[in-house]
Image 1 (spheres, one colour):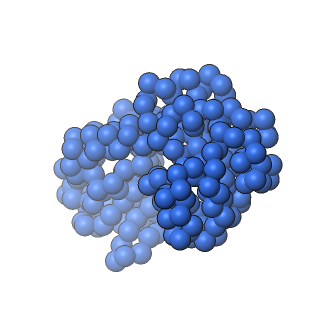
Image 2 (image 1 turned 30 degrees about the vertical axis):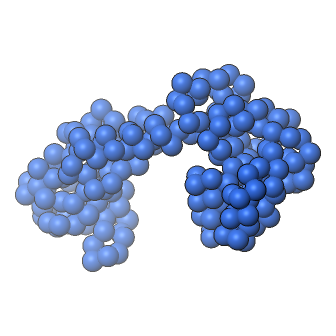
Image 3 (image 1 turned 90 degrees about the vertical axis):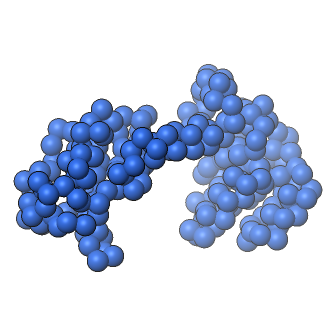
Length: 216
């Protein structure tokens, strides 16, 4: 997969590094010379010192062949303009970073459906860690109507029961079990042991109830 990223700051540089380590081809566009130089040293990728809101710079990045374009600068106006320009190249997926959550609607109005607010995501994640201390980790899915919770089994009411005795229900399903450092896809006849870690797909309205089932 070929990905063009505009923005060589913390978000863009980290994203580029992750994609490259996964074997994807990446081109990074950055208009700040110092950030550009740093990215050129850090990344095994083409780094273009230029403005991603300039058509010539976009074409220099071979934008016609990109599978994904990511506008990852901290400037919402620049991200919006670059996304509008890139839409003309019929790229399958365009993703925009939004620093001010109030600007999300502007991106959606011009047809950018993949809008990410790191600030909002981080704040929401911290809020959930504070209000759900028994949950080790979580992933929000879809539009926020479901989550995957990682929990350690502590509730004596389910210890010794089989997976099929308690899952699935209308509100949740156990999707994986970790035993002795190994992940297992749960079978109905697997026994739930005290201290085992489970990943559970949960409807958002049932999170509190399901957390008690496993950790109370």
